[in-house]
Image (cartoon, rainbow, N blue to C red; front, side, top):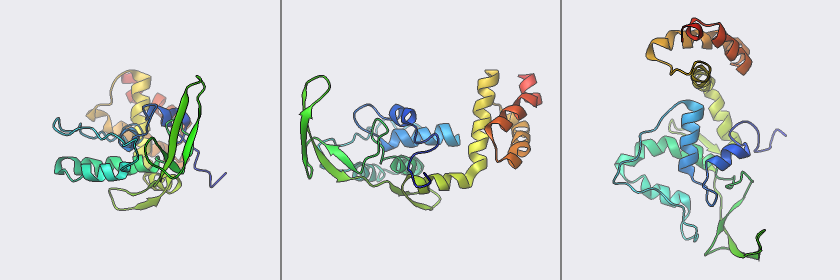
Length: 215
């Protein structure tokens, strides 16, 4: 359905699961995944003196509050301005890729949930704070949830297509894309623009390019 939050690579359960640790989601991990795998942008590693941001499973603080505190460090602010928005857009999906309106908390919440797990062990958790999947891209565009975020991504189709071309070249040849290959990559993009950068068109263009034969 057109209004469904699911659809495309970003909301596949496999992607959502691999960008979580099985217990909690992380806007940072998911944000980095989107930047690297989809857009081809590789953020700098965090400074050694800055600890990782761990979600507060007791429910006292939201992940947004923790990341806002993190961004007060000037050495973190510039990268997190790019990393956090894609991660926030995916926060409405839990560690298994299921839709959620609220976080699950072990300490505080509006309703207590208790029962037995599949292994027969008792569990207790609470319905925590409401999930906020809105954000603002580093260029300034605001979005309210995953569907609006995906529309913003599609405004940069060539950026996504260029990264896909790079990844397919590496997959097909086993060699990285060099700076000297940039003209042939651009030629592939120009050749496939009329087909809206369709995957099949890109694959054919790569195979037919001198770059593929040479590598």
